[in-house]
Picture 1 (cartoon, rainbow, N blue to C red):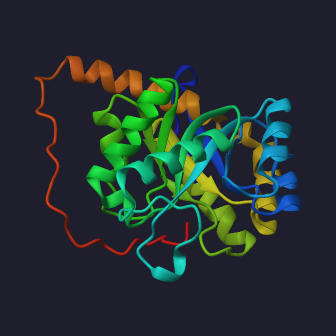
Picture 2 (cartoon, helix red, strand yellow; picture 1 turned 180 degrees about the vertical axis):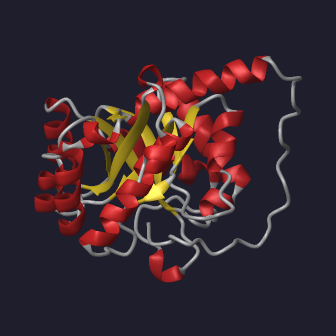
Length: 268
């Protein structure tokens, strides 16, 4: 399946894998922490299990992220403690800082849901400003890409943050194991073709069963599993090097609000 994408060993392809929604369900989150290798775990803030599980993950040497709840398009997908476009600037800032502070040891952030908010340039600018003010360049931002028209990665780049966009959702809508395995191998194929790829999955029974199997034989695919931070900061260095070779580009101005496009994966 992967023969046409093989690359030299010195340029071994890399994948990174985020397990989202950590802390939502205690037992499944504990099972997710048993996955082998450099898996990165993104924790929901303000759940009863988040603090204990995040500290356990840190003791195990795992990389942690904040899975920041953001406003979705569909009303029935909205939830408590989400960042929304209709909040005042001060309320927005207070909530995001609380989200950041609720997860210890974080290396980065990605959006939970957010198909509406990630299309809002001023709102995403506010988020990146706050990250820079609180952490400088230490954190990376991953756009989960819950909306095709998301500007999150673009704004993170504008603010000089290391950033990536999700390439593959492994388990959208909790599919069977065959579909999850197919998505995982799509992730591998993308990495072999492009040099790297980022996948997102969730602590679900079928997902964990497939990942336990696939990650134990990752070397057979001629790819390396790395932390999201390694992928993000390496990508950032490449982008900075390319930028130095190009004429300076004007910074994008805030645009007039437009009607949002319904995201394909709004439930995330």
